[in-house]
Length: 160
Image (tube, rainbow, N blue to C red; front, side):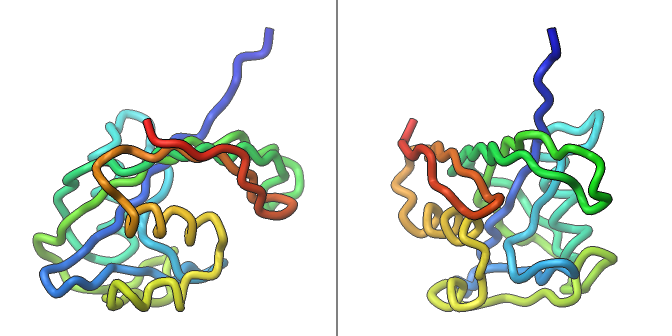
């Protein structure tokens, strides 16, 4: 029996005291809120705080989980050989507590954006869906399943 393989990833919607959202521009993509894969030996909170700091220079406190997402697409990595497994992504609301905006090896730009202007910058449908879940958050965690390849397809959405 082949054991399933999942990538565990986290995303952080960081809102400052002025109601602005932290966005980063990836070098191989567009604007997103920061996040990424949880590394071996990290818990979710440590992984998210590390990813936000690495991608933007901002220190944060993770406050509340708002969504769990399954990207069930199967496709080849950039090398054209490696299969990319299903991703399980957990999104959290965060607040900034220090640091200074700076880019990284993964980001070409980072900035604070007015909450109502974020969707003007985000073009990836899955990221737009996850940000909209933040805007619509009522206290119940969202669970959403989707594919991103070959094109975006929403499979399931519910509150849990």
